[in-house]
Structures are given as C-alpha cells and as structure tokens.
Length: 347
Image 1 (cartoon, helix red, strand yellow):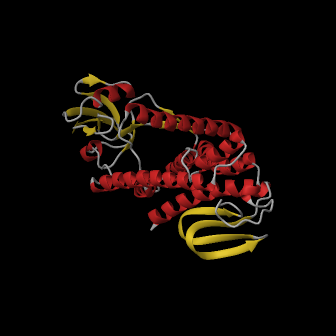
Image 2 (cartoon, one colour):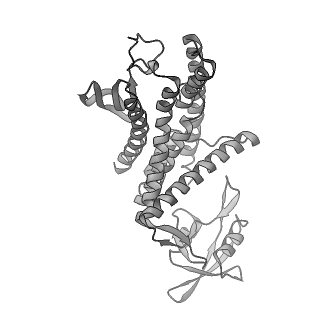
Image 3 (cartoon, one colour):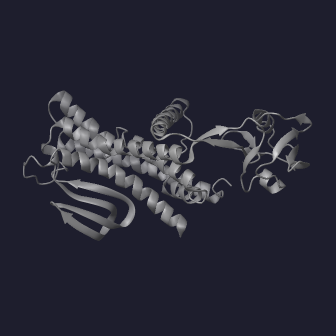
C-alpha cells in the first residue's frame, strides 16, 4: 500500500508543478483558464474560483490545464482572454513555463537534500558503507562497517583498489579478508556480471560522510546538481543517437517499480528520485515533438519568424505524426518494462 501511495504521490507532485507552470503564466497574461485538473477522468472533488474549475480527478497519474481558445479547431469568441489570441511569444512563454517549473522543482528538491542531509564525502579508506541485498557480498555474510584489508593476497589500503580488483573479476573466486570489531575474517565471493556495464559487482558501496551545507550554499549546490544531471541526460541521448545504441527507456511500469523500491530506502533517496523524474519530464517535454510543449513552441516560433501561423490542417498532420511517435516510444518502453519484469527487474 505504501509503495502504491509513493507512486501516486510522485507522479502527482511532478505533474502538478508542470501544469502549475502553464497555469501561472497563462494567468499572468490574462488567459482564461477553464480547468486546472490534477488527474484525468471523472471529477472527484472540485471548486470553481473566478471562472476556473479546480478539479481532483479519478485517475491520479497525470493532469492538465484547459485554456479558452487553446485548440485551433474549437469554436472561438475572438476575445483577448483566449489562448490563441495571445501574441506568439506569449504563447511560447506559457508553453515553456511547464518544463521550467519541472526544472525548478528538481533544483528545490536537490537543494533540500543538501540542506537536510548534507553533501556526501567519499571516504578513501576501504570501509563498506552499504551492502546490497541479493548480491554476492550480502549472501557471503559481509556487513556494513566491515573494513577490507586484503583481496586475493593483495593488501588493500584504498577503496579505489577494491574497485580495480572486483570490476574485472566477474565469475572468479575472490578471497576477501575483512576487519570486523578488531577481528579478521575471510569470505569467498564471486562477483556477478553487470550486463549493462560489463563489470563484476559484489554489491558493496564505500562509506561516505555527510558534510553539513548552509541554507544559501545548499541552493547553489542544488542548482549545480540540476545542471549536472541535465547535461548528463542530454549527453546520454546524444550518445544513443550517434552510436545507434539500443535505447534504454523505462515506461510507466518501470518508473513505478523504481519509485516503489526507492521509497523503501528512505526519504533522501525518494526525494532525489522525484527530482530526477521531474527533470526528465521537463526535458522530454521540450523535445520538438508535436503535442508536447516543445512541439507547440516550434509552431509558435514558426509563426513569429514567418508572420503567419501554420494552417489548422498542417497542425493536425503534425500532431498525428507526433502522437504516432509517442506511441512508438511508449510501446518500446512498455516492452522494456515487461522484459525487466520477467527477469525480476534486474535482480
């Protein structure tokens, strides 16, 4: 039950802030927002305030903002409060406000993590900070706090030495000597192969110390973290296209499973995952795919450059192409999710 609530909470928060961005910018320019809905489907709760219907709908995984005169095909009154009556650059600002709000949410959440929990500082000593379940180290009996002093006869003084020995040793027997409460103990461990990275892993993470960060400094670090992850995601996408590598997408099932699992590991990891999901949704919506915010921005830029909007017919064709592309991405992501599920989600 807690896992389900965590999934609903995550999607609701991320989508709410995305739609809030569109809503606030539309209100700023005097656009009549007919509906602000958190969720899809039948209305569960609702209240009309100043001609806007605020709704909580049955299906919580999503949401939308409905503005007057938003659809080129709908009957319009030609009043300034309609979306398409706004100048092209105002429509761009309304469209881009949703993704921007996702970036801001990610930055605030990263900043919150730095302020509350601090900044992780890796310890160079070969002390184990975490042992992952269902991995060789856990099954062998190695525990958090153990200090690795010897692997296969080689004396270990630095965590990097642990990595250099374990990563290329998948499938091999490794004798690991550890120090636990001033007692030396020896374990036999066989690193398992990580198919994606092609390295051996035994499921241990080095110890980290958390360094306290001040209030203002936490926001600077949160902003840097947001920029770092944005660059990393864009580089990954660029690499995927240039190397023609198989896309590694996660669909609703995969993301839901990830949220459910991470929610069990503590608030810090859970909040960090929400920030990353918000960041990914913000970036994805900026892609120039019709029916996404990025596609709408492309239409309005064209109007600004040429002095005339695309015809309703061309918009409909572009939207059908965009919808088809999204369906292909969705189907591929669902197939990847089902494949991971059948393989025990990579366990």
